Image (cartoon, rainbow, N blue to C red; front, side, top):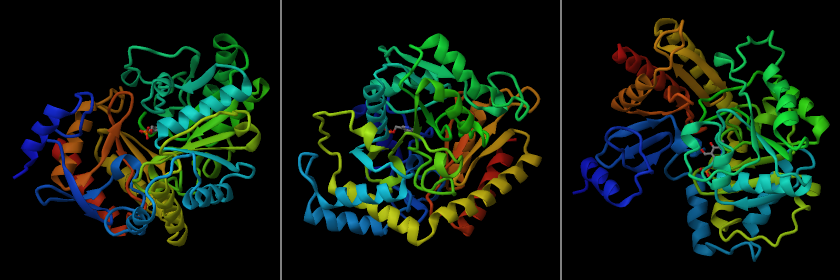
Amino acid sequence: MKTMQNNAERAKRHFFPAQQTYYEQPLTLVSGEGSRLRDDVGNEYLDGFAGICTNTLGYGDTPVAQAVAEQAKELIHTSTLYLNEPMLDLAEKVAEIAPQGMTKSFFSNSGSEANEMATLIARTSKKSVDLLSLDHAYHGRTAYTVALAGQSQWRNFATQMPHVAFLPNPYCYRCPLEMTYPSCGIACAKYAKRVVESQTDGAPAAMIAETISGVGGIVAPPPEYFHVLKETLAPYGTLLIADEVQTGWGRLGDGWFGMVSSYGVVPDIITSAKGLASGFPIGITITRPELADTFKGPHINTFGGNPIATRAALVTIDVVEKRDLIANCKRQGETLMAGLRDLATTFHAIGEVRGKGLMIGVELVQDRASKRAAPDLATKMLEEMRERKVLIGKGGRYGNVLRIQPPFVFDDGDVREFLQAFKDSLAALR
Ligand SMILES: Cc1ncc(COP(=O)(O)O)c(C=O)c1O
């Protein structure tokens, strides 16, 4: 019989060691239903992390699972050399829900690829190789997207691409400029002027930013951040790329794309992946025709626009609309955040609770006065939550931020159960 123990040994024997898993004893998942997952020895877990912010509609016999099964019998694959109906339908649907004028899409298989295409379009159209990114950023694991990473632990490739300059992250809890919001006047966004004028060719092609840094520790910028950033970059003609890989499709609870709906700023290019097809691999780069048209190709992507993936995405968007799941993300997110902030009054290991909708971070510290990061506590919290049959993630530059990013179908009971497990796990750390 396969057991937890021998699965860990099998993985060790046959996977690259770089592929690390959560938990001292890796977890093997076998099935699920709604917001629940089951492991290989029959335990059931409430899922607060959705396979890294991806399983939008949860598990089991969902409309996505049904559509995938039907589509697999009709047509599994075409490549971008042919058209298929789901890829066309999805491109039309995206044009309908994206900000006005953003009518063109390029499909790929992952967030990394979506970002590669975005930077390629920006560089081609602007005729500059220079790019701006943020400290704490994470944009993927291809060589180029690693060069856009603003965390040393994710810049661990032997080769790095030049021509990327970094701006301070709008991380108010640990302000890189040692200022205080709002009296800072969003100095971190205005800092872009200095970076452009000193570290680039003077007209960098694009600035790429996650709407909320996910891997970087759920760092949510202040409300006016993207306005000030866009205004600061306008004189240089620098395009704004919104990496909505984690924040897209309604997770932030205000609309389809976080930068547009939660921050009121329309970027020039939007990239996404993860939750779009509720767990089926897909990447998308969305922009205006005049930018898309500057890249003449030829260009192919073997699995891009795959009929199963694009149909899974269409069904995901449809269900999110029909079941009003964006509003659910807002409502459940607010209850979760309020419950976590309440726990912070008793548990001083919580330095800050932040985020929007169902994208919440809990930063753990050794003590509140020094704000010294507590990565060990974060690791222990993952184990304690697992003991109580709840899954969460972690991240942050210092590895001390707990990440709560459940499926959009999280309901009132799930939230109550989650908060109880969180409280008990915090108590067990003492
Ligand atoms: C913001 C962001 N961009 C890009 C990526 C890369 O996506 P993928 O792993 O699908 O290549 C990720 C993955 O975590 C991400 O969080």
